[in-house]
Image (tube, rainbow over the protein chains, first blue to last red):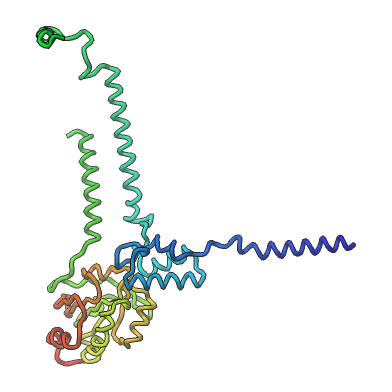
Length: 158
Length: 174
């Protein structure tokens, strides 16, 4: 009987512990000023907030500190900064509108360059196989060319 | 010209166009006397809703770009408020534009200096860019037709307002 009671108590304690720990395990990591400073700009200085010391940057840092103290997540703080200063406050361009070109143009340029290089290599190999222009003639020079070659060889005593 | 050359030329032109667009959209030059003032709608600093300079057509408007973190803006605010008290009415107003600033900081600034003239918010600096400002404070006097008549890239004081701005304004306050 006492064994059964002990098991029930142990189960209840374990369930209570699980319930107490669950929110901690599921919570997002606490936002940090150092991490956010690396990802946002000082709009007036045009540099990363991390590097800025202007009065505007000081106010922006104080704003971030206040939101961290309120328990906001990193994403929520960045959203709040965008609401205050617009998209340009983000150090990385947004994945929409004209800013999308910052991601798309390098990829397109890479693909075009890779295709051009691939086509160039294919063409070069095809030309090599078919003995195209610029390949030495296995039969050797003929006529005037043969005479000139013989004369050169004789002159240099090769 | 072969198809391949045409594609290469088009690709180069597209790249150059992209670079030019990037440069043009970033750069701006200060609006000059005689030019039309930009009329972008901006949110009000207090009370919600949007407003633009176009809504002040028929009035002289002294557009004042400021920010709460700007020390010269603190120094000129009392002079602007006094000028508004003297001349503000149906023919003239000061219009403050709080630029690249936090909303709460801007509101606190307006309360601290008792600014009674209308205030708009330019958080991303778009309006500031449209006027081609290079910092804060900057002041632009816009006539009743929306044309810029006087520009001061810097703070104003009572004497400056009296000598430089007042002569433009209608004599009778109403």
